[in-house]
Length: 101
Image (tube, rainbow, N blue to C red):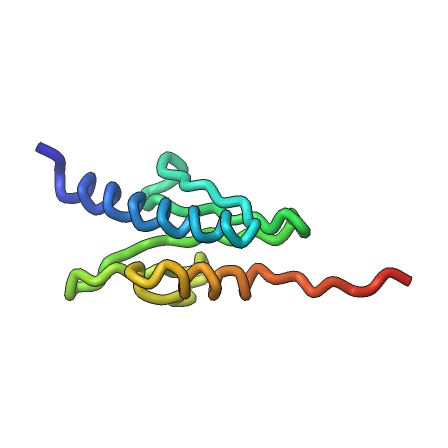
């Protein structure tokens, strides 16, 4: 039998993997990292500007609803709406390209 913490971590990983697939469809690199700290995270890289990275976390509220969060405690949205969450992460990761001169 798994501990409550293990179940919560597994649920977080499931949500983050779904978000990773959506972000990869937006051409971002995304990898779930579950061994680098107490909470699983999704490490996202903008391949156009590799210095632009962000970590996304999934956490559940007291009512049991799961939410995605940016590393700086910015609430992204409910984990059930993966498409909107991916769009919001993509907007945070967006890089404005300046025309070449």
